Image 1 (cartoon, rainbow, N blue to C red):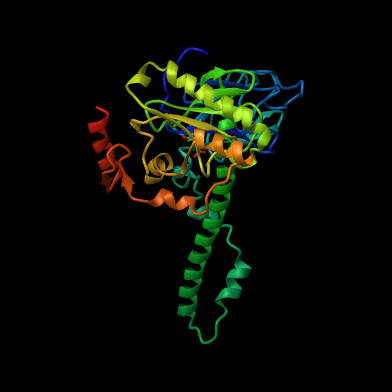
Image 2 (tube, rainbow, N blue to C red):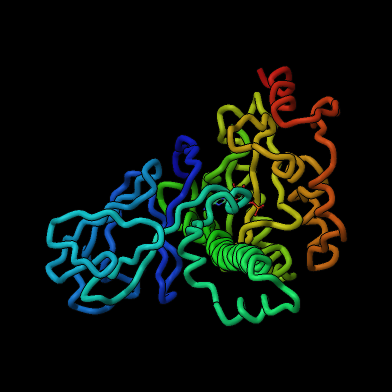
Length: 356
Ligand code: AMP
């Protein structure tokens, strides 16, 4: 086992997204220099592109990424050459071409998946309305017996309705793209040594990026298994090993004597790539914010690792009961004394009694 590392509580994220989909989004940590260029990761093999063509530094507070051109050939942002050793800002919606107008990228800032709606980049009213389709507009407003004033009013209303619809559908598709990209996040983090706390030939353990308790780790197989749904008889050994590694982590955690831990899977995971949660039962964390968060760990939505193994031994697969997602909506109930609480702040206050 490698040594323990502190838990990071980063609340936001920034991704460098390849516009032509050559590879998975690359995570840009806050105020951390990341070098992008010719590499296996970017799949850029072009010799005109230096291995460290650009240096990128995301600033989560300011909402942009500073791009510094290090290579000799030109990199550009929104068709403007950056210039060797010069820096320019790359904002959401702008395009960075890594070299010679090739290899386009954009950036996306985000918080947790439950907060994506707040963060999906909004298009301005002007931008959308200037694109509205006037022939559809005209067809829509051709009504009988309308005075010029009525017509004008209707035209305005229609324009507004159209604008809203267009904004909504543009946002929806951005949200969907973003959700798809977000769901792949574990695949990125599991490769990041900063997050790894243990690795062997078959599994890796990472710190959960948005821990819902003082200790919250995820055990992931190196084999690309999307979720429990994809698990088959031949994966039994792997799941047993994941459980064993999780238990060993708990034993090695100095606070584990004072804190209880549970090991398990979410019945319907939000993130792609199979992961076993290893989580201390204090649930003391600023990242635990919603009823859904609480209920996903404190109802039968959380499938105990031992039960999953038993199911695997008996049936060779894992079945999830119908309607399990309804459990996410039930009344908040303290997992220690079963007292019911109305809100998350009340629950958090109550938990202090059990976990001073
Ligand atoms: P679930 O898919 O519901 O079983 O849980 C996914 C877990 O992954 C949650 O506890 C999140 O806090 C965590 N998480 C989300 N995105 C990342 C990421 N990029 N890296 C590490 N952990 C993440």
